[in-house]
Amino acid sequence: MPSKIRWGTLGCGSIARKFIEDLAYSKYGVIHAVGSRSAARSKTFAQELNVPKSHGSYEDLVANPEVDIVYVATPHPFHMEHTLLALKAGKPVLCEKPVSMNARQLKRMINAAKDRRLFFMEGMWTRFFPALQQVRKWLLDKAVGNLLNIEADFGIAFKAGPSHRIHNPQLGGGALLDLGIYVVSLAWLVYMAEPKKITSVVHFGPTGVDDQSTLIFEYLHGATAVLQSSSRLAIRPEARIYGTKGKIILHENFSCPNRATLEADGKNPQTLTFPHPGRGFQYEADHVAECLHKGRPESDQMPLKESLAIMQTMDKIRRQWKLKYPGE
Ligand SMILES: NC(=O)c1ccc[n+]([C@@H]2O[C@H](COP(=O)([O-])OP(=O)(O)OC[C@H]3O[C@@H](n4cnc5c(N)ncnc54)[C@H](OP(=O)(O)O)[C@@H]3O)[C@@H](O)[C@H]2O)c1
Image (tube, rainbow, N blue to C red; front, side):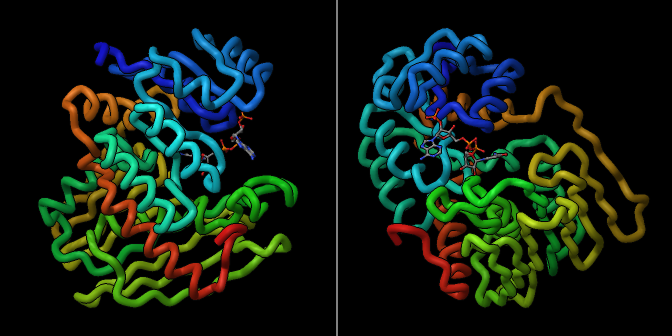
C-alpha cells in the first residue's frame, strides 16, 4: 500500500463531489480516479475537480491498478452490485450509507469481502468526527450515568420532484433509508444493542415511499429511543442522550457534528467545539486509510456486524410499514 491511499470514486454524483473535495484535507488519502456510466461525464467531473484519471465505465475504474480503494457513491439500490463489482476486481470498498437496501443484500456483500479478505465498510461518516469520538468517550466514562433515553431527529424539506432519488422507489427513495439511517445508527452506537420492541408511525408521500416517521425503540433494560426522520419537513438535526446523571447533546447537524455538550448533574455544562475545514469526509477517509495500512479487514468504529444489525432493524421497521422496494 502506498503511503497515500489512492481513491477511486464510483459514480460522479453529488456526494462523490463532496467526498473528493474533502480529500484535499485528508492526511493519508488522495483522489486518483473517477468512474461514471458516461465517459463525457467522468471527463468533465475529473477536470472540474482536478482528478488525474477518468473512466467511462465502472468496470474500467475498478480495473485500474493504481486505484487502492473504491468509494461507492451511487444510489442505494446499486450499492450491492457496485460493491460486488469492486470486490471481485480485488479492491477494498467504502460504500455510502445506507450500505444496502436490506440485510439480505448486506450479507452477500460481507461474505464477498470476507471470501476475498478485502476491507469493506459502510460510509456512515458521522462516526469519525472528533465531536462524536468525544461523545463516545463520555459514554464509555459513564459521564451521564446509565443511559435511559435518546432523542434524535433528522428532517430535510426536499423540494425535488418525484423522480429524484429521495422520492423515487426505483432509486431507493424514502426518508428512512436516506435520513432515518442516521438516527437508527446513532441509537445503535449509544446502546450497542438491538431494540426488543419497535413502535412506529409513518406517513407515505405521493410516490409510495415514507416521507416522515417517528420510531420508538424499547430496549431490554427499559431504555428508549425516540427517533424522527422526514423528507418533507425540516426537523432540526440534533440528538440528545439522557442518562441517570445528566444529558449529552450532539448539536445541529448531528450527522456531521462539530459541537457537543455534556450536562452532568452538579457540574457546569461543558460545550466542546471541533472546527474543521471542508465538510468532514476527511475523517472517514483517514480512518479507512489507517485500516488499510494496518491490514485490518474491517473497521472497529463501524464494524460490519453493526451495519448488519442496523439493516436488520431497518428491515423490521419496513415490514411494519409493508414497504417493499422493486425486486424485494
Ligand atoms: N454521507 C452523506 O452525507 C450523504 C449525503 C448524500 C447522499 N449520500 C448517499 O450517497 C449515495 C448517492 O447519493 P447522491 O446524492 O450523490 O446521488 P446522485 O447525486 O443522484 O448521484 C448518484 C450517482 O450514481 C450514479 N448512478 C449509477 N446508476 C444510477 C442510476 N440508475 N440512477 C441514478 N444515478 C446512478 C450516477 O453517476 P454516473 O452517472 O456518473 O455513473 C449518479 O451521478 C446515496 O446512497 C446516499 O444515501 C450520503
